[in-house]
Length: 219
DNA sequence: GTGGTCAACGAGAGGA
DNA sequence: TCCTCTCGTTGACCAC
Image (cartoon, rainbow, N blue to C red):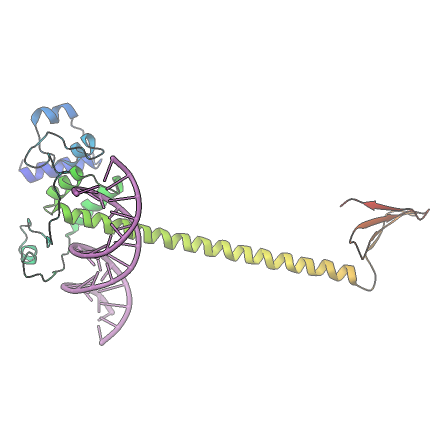
């Protein structure tokens, strides 16, 4: 198996695409941390690990981006390599489908990366760590924007419902008032001897019995 | 020509 | 002080 294929396999394992390599074995074989699964397993918080000195140890200590690292310094792609010039002119990089898919899969698992994971992913994709970092930053921003849109729609719907309810209640109130101030005041015959009347001043229900004793009803 | 998308950047905030 | 994050912006590219 070629080195790159091995790394991709490692990435797939790390992304939950099947298979499992015992952690112990990986350490014993001193495999490179270009296998993302190992990076995720061993460095959940980004501590440097002693797996491959060339690629991993001390990553968190060094500043990954120094100045402007324009796209794909490491890329073998001819187009991309053209992007890497020092003229200061920013060339637009388009990530390949595979690169985007891998980044997307990785993002589904972890929306943020620690330095080790970042470097491992960058190695897998033949990109710079800085590029992976930027991709994740932009991806988080896109997710947030999308979520904001969803929330906005929900709030809009909720607001509409409240407006409808408010309108309904206002109409209901108007109808009740119309009943109260109409030509014949609210009067309900309870029995042969008693009626229920609404007091026009205090809006309280009053039961009037035969003996003309008024009894206020607690509403 | 114009608008949308997205990689890349800089400023500023916050945590360790 | 270093590092990483968010936010706002820029500029290249693409489709129309």
